[in-house]
Length: 246
Image 1 (tube, rainbow, N blue to C red):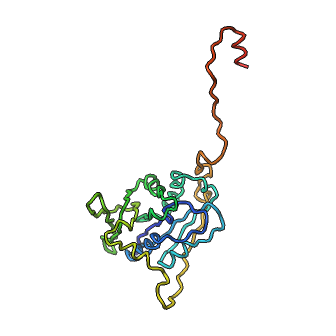
Image 2: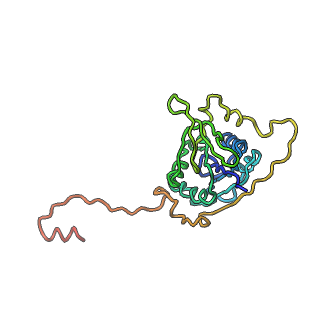
Image 3: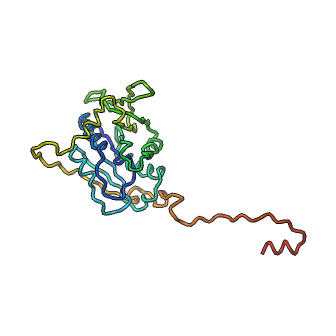
């Protein structure tokens, strides 16, 4: 039996969380969209401090999240985009996804640069600014495409396996994804069945065979030893030269 196609969702736009962050409406809609497309949604969340409750993951479970991977390590607090992308790459390669998606607006810093690094490290196609994912294949041979604006023209782009896609609901003509994201999970007046908790796998950098020094930035407050410039001095005797060399 063919395994279900997988969609990896980079929560918070691939950024590193330092507290129990709520699930962004865009991430919520993305998880729900995966279910409608017949994809198994898997969340990846990065944390720079231990003991943080999986609030976003639990909220994503109400939209059908299958499972989640959380990477927890204090060294991530000083990781820049290239270093963070390295960490996500180690996780994603093991998951072997059919697609990787993120919502740029979910990044609290507004950068959403980690997925681009991830695509570079994976050698995968990077599709920014898509506003919708659509299924183009059948159950036996699943295939997917992204609808996006390229200038004033709306195009449909066939997605190769493993592509990294940014979903930008605000650019949709009908704002379909944004509308679905705006509906809270508790919108029904009648209490529904409790959401099944998504299994969570917690990893450290050591579990990914990564040393903490690989994810630190130059500006992580460690001392940097650099040569001190000396003024240009003209010597006229061996005595003055000896004095300069002391």
